Figure 1 (tube, one colour):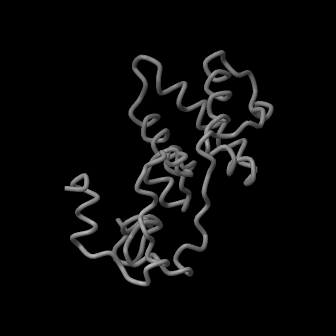
Figure 2 (cartoon, rainbow, N blue to C red; figure 1 turned 60 degrees about the vertical axis):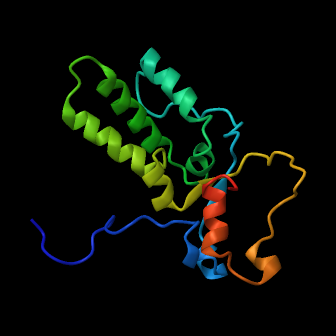
Length: 159
């Protein structure tokens, strides 16, 4: 077993909303994905002989927000291998090893929360609901950081 030193996924994943991450240099590298997902057609299946389940999963995967980045990074083979492993892991009596591989693919393809954070991807916010109050003033407009009381007010529902 390796001793000491950093690991590829050691430490907490980056958090785009951390209080210390409001500097422009910390926001660089984050990619905002469209909430509605990708509207591009799914690419051609790159592996041989897809099953019906693989075909259904393949089409579904390419409608997700992450598909925008998969297409940009030419990750068709990675997504196809994930789909194949997922279809195999779903079968009764699927091995724990297959399930582990599926979990690793979920992270590497940004399909899990941890995977999205590690890839520095975030999904665009939904259109804000209209309110009579208007938007809360941002730190940029007020020049000061919100107090702990103001931050807790948001958590407690404005009480």
